[in-house]
Image (tube, rainbow, N blue to C red):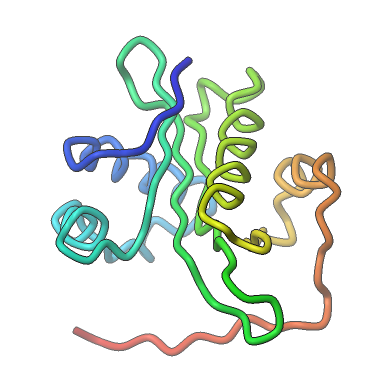
Length: 149
């Protein structure tokens, strides 16, 4: 197992992981992103996100996609958008290793902490995050505005 920073040539495999996550979350129709957009947004002149990947036998089997946000109360925070492990590779410790690497990325980039979301029905993920001493908020609601292109 190798964990490394993602590069532009990884985008096709990263997008496959995104699609697998959408199926798992029962929302494949919600994916409007494209590999081309991911390439531009993650590996262009002004990257909007970073990604760590886990490789086994030269194949990407997991990823952690993150970006930085700023809290008026806490300062710079790493926001973990998604951590995805291919179904066939779950239960082998890859998720924990990748999550630990993401925590280290937050520390190395001078973040004051890390944030993410988890679906309330996703018990395996909730139990996974509990092992790290995660604080779960119950007071905040997610709000969204979606724009047509």
